Length: 211
Length: 211
DNA sequence: GCATTTTTCTAACACTAGTTCGATTTTAAA
DNA sequence: TTTAAAATCGAACTAGTGTTAGAAAAATGC
Image 1 (tube, rainbow over the protein chains, first blue to last red):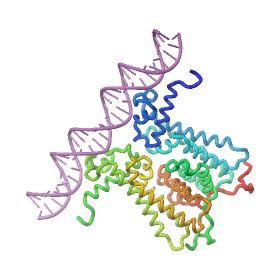
Image 2: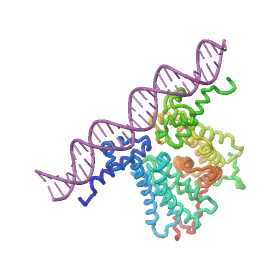
Image 3: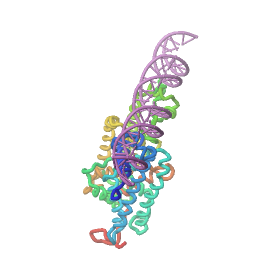
Image 4: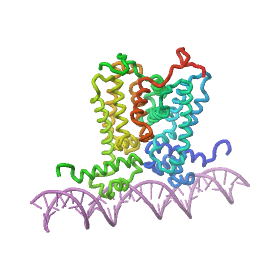
């Protein structure tokens, strides 16, 4: 067979899917190879034909997840309609990030959820991909700031972390059907660009108003 | 002794401190009772004089953590200078939340970090405190909106989740010394109220500008 | 100081996890 | 159909976990 993939490749993918899903749900340490195997219709021992260890399996899930968001956001920047504003660019990046995170991708959401609690050496080997993704966002925001689309009197690194936090945290509460990803992106960008505050009556230098 | 606490109470507190710290670092499943015991200068078996099980220990850590933020934010609202604006109120709440989360409190940060990966029944028993805390924020934001300090054409629930996400995610990256909690609160509130965008040149109904 | 309670230790138990490896089945080519 | 390789099974092993309970030690009251 050359049209498709070898049986090994198929099993491999099935295992990775099962692992991503289970890791995402229960976390790394609480996930047992027996569970993963069951979800992949195999015996636990058979996993070792495809992966050298549980850590190796984890590592690949993490890498895939991070590559997917990275590529999604990168493509969102390349496929922008000509003449897009920096707000449009950022909005597209936000939407791409959220979509990857929340739509059918256990890999990225697993990565986001469990990264804080993985073995030290796995983290060390994975950190490069993380940094590369952070760098992508750094560039997007810096370009916007340099073009005077974002205020210059702010700590962009801090803004980036707060922004990523708002987006990433959605893996903890998002339920498909209750809110659309578009609406989430709308609200996020509204906050980011314009805020949701209304000027309160008082007009002095401080915000003093009557309760 | 009546001036202080019994030896049992002291040991109990020592164990809880050690548990919160270790849970926060490694997650629940990956944390062993041997580690907790070592951090508390005891033997693993001795823990059972104070707690019935690992789950029970976890439960108490979670509860304490949630109560601490709740109380901190609640107090921040009560101790406001008279005539404070709604922005001031929200800003105080943000700062209280961040301070509890990032300043010497392993309990709250443990709660935030590991909540997604705890046994089902523990979560079920803990969820009330979570809901109560969410309700506190809901009230604060709703009051501001009703007083026309926040826009009315937005989904406040969604804003709340994004806001909490931005704040909570800081447990994943915050390092004392690099950024002050004040600065973080400043940026968060600036984003929330005014945004960090600058009106781009084009003035049509849409944001179309020349790159 | 002694007796009683409180607190901790120690060693063991039961159980489950990750992992290994030879046997077995499935697959694909000749 | 035969045969060799690829893929999976299945049972075992090792290590480490949460947990228990009786012995030891420390604290407390008389």
